[in-house]
Every structure is written in C-alpha cells, then in structure tokens.
Figure 1 (cartoon, rainbow, N blue to C red):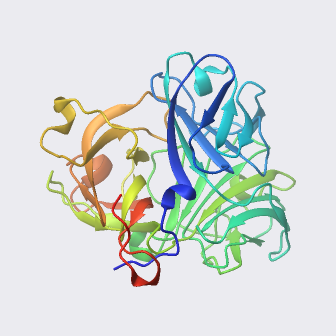
Figure 2 (figure 1 turned 30 degrees about the vertical axis):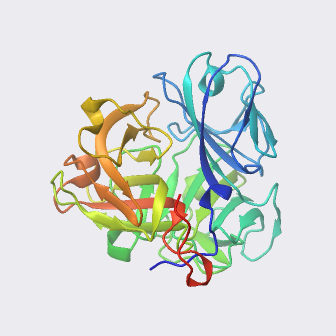
Figure 3 (figure 1 turned 90 degrees about the vertical axis):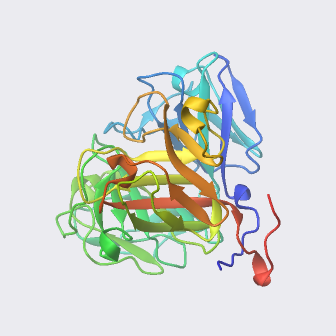
Length: 357
C-alpha cells in the first residue's frame, strides 16, 4: 500500500471548471491560492493552452501548444487569490458561455533565491507536494540548476521565455527507467539525452537538475522557466506502462485514486499528449456505455483544439485502467509515460486507511 503525508490532494493540486462571462471573472473554489494555473477553453477550437505562474507574475502567459515566447496579456489571468484567480475578457480564458478547465498547483508563492546549482535561480518549491517552479537565465554551457525540492524530480518541463522555442520535457521514468526527452508542444517520440540536447544524461539529484547547451533550455542570456515534479507516495506518480492493444487494457497502479492524469506515447511518434481529470466527463451513453468509472473527456496540451471524447480510462481507488485500444493510450507493446495526481490516497498518514471520498 502507498502511504502519504497528504490526506487531501485537492489542497495542493486541483481542477477547477468554470463558465466564461466575457468580462472580469473571479474564479473561486480552488481550495488554495494557486502558484501555477494552466487554462484551456474546452468549447472552442483554435483556443490556446494558457499557463501563468506566481514566479513570472500575473498577466505573463506562455502556451503549451505553441513555441511562442512569453507574452503580456492584461485581459488574461489578472490576479491570484486565496481561493482561486481572476481572469479578464480574453476569449481563451473567459469567452462568454464557454466551458473552461483550469488545472492548479500550489508551490510557494513568488519564490526565493537559490544558489545550489552552477546557474542561480529563483525557486518556488512545495516540498510537501513535490512541485517547484524554477526561473533562471541561460548561459549556453552544460550546467546545474537548483530546484528546491529536497528529492530528485522525475519530470521537468521547460520553456524559453525570451525566444520562440519548443517545450522540452525530461521524462526520467520513460524508456523503462532509462529516461529520455519529449516535447510538450509536439507529437514526436522519445529522444536521447546529450550535452548538446536540452538535458544531458546526468540524472537530477536531491538539489539540482542539469541542462545541456540547447537553446530551448539554456540559450545564453534568455530567461527560462522550469516546472519540476517529484513523486510523493500516495499523492503523485510519475511512471510508465505498456499497452496491450485491447479495450481490456492494462491496470496502472498508482497507490491512490487519481484526479488528474497526463500521458504520452514514448516509443513511437504521431500521438498527442493527453490530459484527463475527474471533473470533466461526458455522461452520454455514447461515450460511457457500461464503464461506470470511465473518464472520456480529452484535452491535448500540444493542440489548440476543443475537447474530444473517447472511452479511455477507468479511474479506480488505487490507480487507473486503460479502456481504449487506440495508439494514443494503448498500442500493443507501446510504452507510455504518465504523471498522475491524487484525489484521495489509498492509505493516509501513520498507516491509517484514508477516509472514503
């Protein structure tokens, strides 16, 4: 069984759905003041994924489906509040009548100076939940950077803020634990580490991670942002599963009931990153059929498209079971990297079974 120091995962990571109003809109009910908010308009095609964090500051946005540099949007996310955030009139954040999803993480505010690595950084770290936001300036030399987590992260997502560039993801759990690099804005397969790549082969430690000389993680003089995720037993799981090509797909043990799952095929190209959460679902019989726990609403971090539907995964008390036979989630012998966060742990602190939720 998985034991955890977190009995209520929604106090550290939470999905909040809302309906756009077209004018200033205070969103509450997140359950904490978010430090990283990822927003997607579910209803509209050609609507970008918008990401804002407390280290860069409100009105500063980047887009997981684009290579574009950071931009300022005074009609985007305009404030973080004690129980949520406020959005302005921009349609991707707040189109009148649109269904909109937000995924929210708690770090540690605007951050503080970190000198653990070769490159000094500003770090907002939540060591309880294993999540940190790291801002630094590139030097075009293979270097280490402090992440503030106290344990080694297993997934790192980086974006060059100053230049148009791809989103390299260090997936340490992929390739049977050997790891590799994918790109959040692309559908490509897992690539190799290297000193001239975004990330070298040197594994992250309890205090630092390494970047290569590639411009998308270390362009000289560019400001860059990394989002670092470490596993916390009973709250988060970053790992890999192997598909079997059947609608009776593999069961993936996480040690908790997931509230959020993001996954990507690693050993072949052409498939999207996919996000599922337990707040979004289409309860039409055309999609749910006999799968009572099915989660079928899909959004793709690398695409501006509207929400799509497919019987894909069952959410269970201790993990999830794949219900698709498609290559996007369950190609035969294909290997998928995933990151999952808990709605409820299987077992809480002190070996005490967690309360049912």
